[in-house]
Each structure stands twice: as structure tokens, then as C-alpha cells.
Length: 70
Image 1 (cartoon, rainbow, N blue to C red):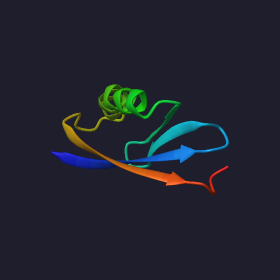
Image 2: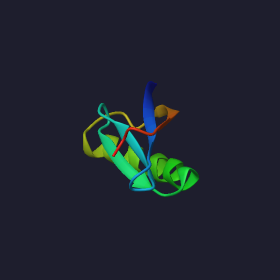
Image 3: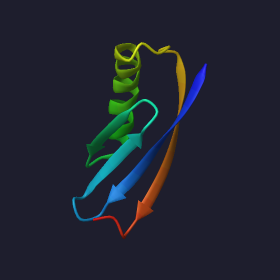
Image 4: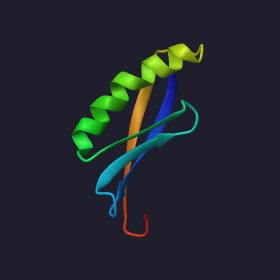
């Protein structure tokens, strides 16, 4: 089973959380951290399937709150 780490970063200026992983690839955003986590959990298997990859995976979420992101 493949493990992916999804980086969750707070964009202060836009007031949204951004979820990114270049290996899947995925880039989503939401103003709610919890909603974004759920969106990622739904989108990842779909993206993996579209890319011909194994959809069985483990997702790790790493949250960053950076003030320097515009």
C-alpha cells in the first residue's frame, strides 16, 4: 500500500487551506480544514484511478500555518 503525505497549508491572504501532493497529483482548497480533509479523501482515489495507479493508499496529513504565503 502506497503512503502519500498531503501538505495542508493556510493561505492567510485568501483565507483558505490548500492541500497539495505532487505525486498524486492533487491541489485543492477550502476555507475549512475539516472539509478539505474530506474532499482530499474523496478526490485521491479518483485521481489515482484516472492515472492508472493503485487506489489503495494511506493518506498522511501534514498541516502548516505559514504567514508568508500570499
